[in-house]
Length: 299
Image (cartoon, rainbow, N blue to C red; front, side, top):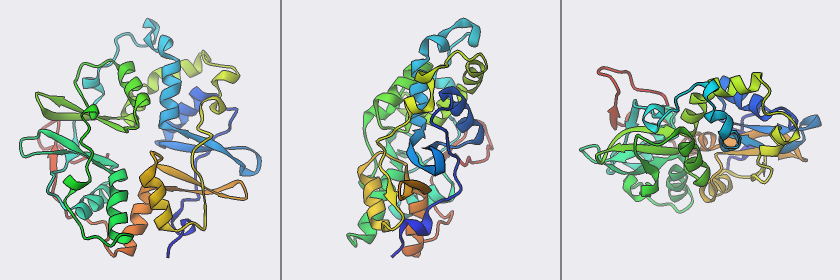
């Protein structure tokens, strides 16, 4: 049976606990990393700095982000959203949906009916349930309607303010919000979309050193309570942890020191190998482009 040692990633971006929080937000956006472990001397593990932590930094700087000298007009949810996205249909086979997310390197997608009306969301967290049912409970595949989230709290309009979107992400465990117009999906906003949109503001504030001092370091915002694992834990146990938590990544420790990290995607790829179901681009969900003849995204 595979253990975390077999599929963990060992080359990681890490952060210093005393680094300025704004500088670290800028760094994660710049290198396109959605979270980084925080380490001390000899790679001693201290916590993790995630997208949610980055959003907490933005929320704490709300007055500065509203100031007129940093960009003027505020962005709305309609301007923040991604319009080029894949959408799944409820009768799609759950295994095909898992493979589709993996092969297209996306963490989730809206589920819609034939008219594009919102029904739910299928994501990496639901993929955990699919794999546990298949491997641990020995259950056959099913349609994704069995696994998708149908919470209406995921749905927003196009007129929310930038900081209202930030607060919605902080108040919920959702990583994406689906933008709907007249009942039909017209776009999607992820935490990453929000951070990318704020990049210029973050860079400007960072250069002006407006958020300095011990209360503005990585250690003040990092998640020091995040679950960690050791490298001998088996893949079933890793799947169960991901299924029961909102974490997307698990730092792997050896004697208190960071040796690697396992993400949901790492686990899903490893499980596909066990199930002998390689991630292939065979599924044919709907694609919603913002312009005619647009190429599908790798969100």
